[in-house]
Length: 580
Image (cartoon, rainbow, N blue to C red; front, side, top):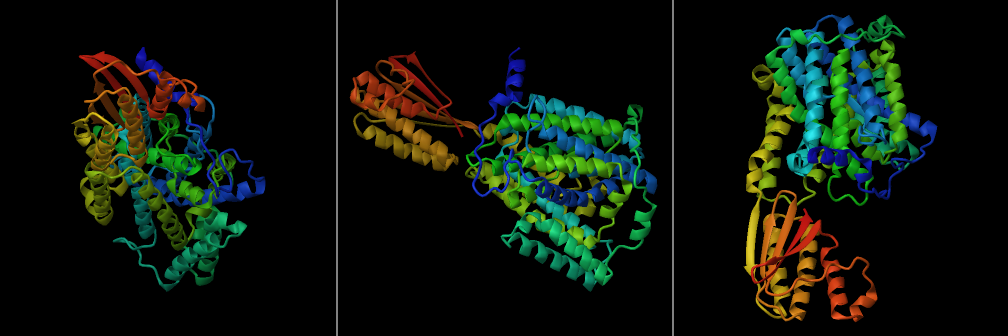
């Protein structure tokens, strides 16, 4: 049952890397943020999340033209968004990343809902297909032992950047700049530009209001829209007709009504949805940890498991599939407010919204220029976060190709959305197409990752210098992380100095590089080296030769994942493994 042991270890919270609070954060994960400030920040999240409500409304219109069905579907969808957030905020048990990641209706699934509507499926049939997709997502999460290999930084970074591109595309649609949309008048342009300027000015003001720059800028934009008459027609009538309180009425999933084509679209969208979730988790993980150098897999795997469960539960009640609201997460990063309490309060606010259609209507009928301004402002932070994530490791030719292909495919979908909607509705969004291409490019090129190199080192004091020059060349050619290159160089220096002191020459050195690790093999004629010192002491450097060697071996192996020695033909072979 090795697989069960590996799974249990992957979901164990005790295996999480210890996080270090970065400087400059206003509120960290467990910070006791003041209730009033937390409520205001939570409302700002909800204001950003409410922009995504238009996605659920568009989904509903693709399946049914009845406004009552659309309202019902939207309330159910908001409830599942609150459930997704609550599951991610859990800090105990095998579910949830533990990160304060706000949620929304997963944009990656929108094309699949459109495919379901085009095939004549109703809300009950779509819900059944969402249940299947959620269960499939949970199984994939359990099977992802090598998360960094399947979705490396390059793929996750591309996904985060394309989320920003998707938000820009949605902003242009809301603002009437896409074909078929109503062109904005001078008043709408003024609202858009002045709202963005207000957000930027407040964000750079170095005042307490900087943390709620989007909310302040949005309120300013709404007031300006009322003054200029840029409020949508019938907005008052829509709000007046909505009740203050109504229980959401679920749709029971109809598994008998599922159809192969839309079901395949939902399953295909899982690739983009899962990569999007990983990108959202890593965005918060990287921002919340000053010592972050690489993804910490256990929290991400628990988050993916909770994500799949929330998607399945959304299908059971007939709501839209939830996922991370990267725009709201980017806002948290931009303002340095990462306290879990803020998102818990936001979860409660979302539950209230789900039971209050009139409040939902207030957000839905917000002026399009204000919604577009919010998306444009936040998307810039998301693109920057994605670029930083994609370039954590040096981009060699393969990683550059993965990022280029994914970004290129996503931008093509953004520039020609109508063509993809007509021919490939499941891949009609930049996020869906770009994430799929980047994911497949990574899988297809994995066999090309393994690289090997060998060298025979001359005897004498020059062996360490020769090995250092050889290692530096490999680090550049293979695109190793600077940290990995330093660890390799230090390990070779210490081991070869020990061998030189013993008078051993003619060392055979080999290196093998995989996707996420580097292996060094050293073979020499002679006895094995002592085990690294368990408790190294400075006085060991002045002690007997064996103590000095043990201290040097501790220096060589302290950053290694593993160090082993075995008898080889005519001598000894040592193996060092480093994570890259």
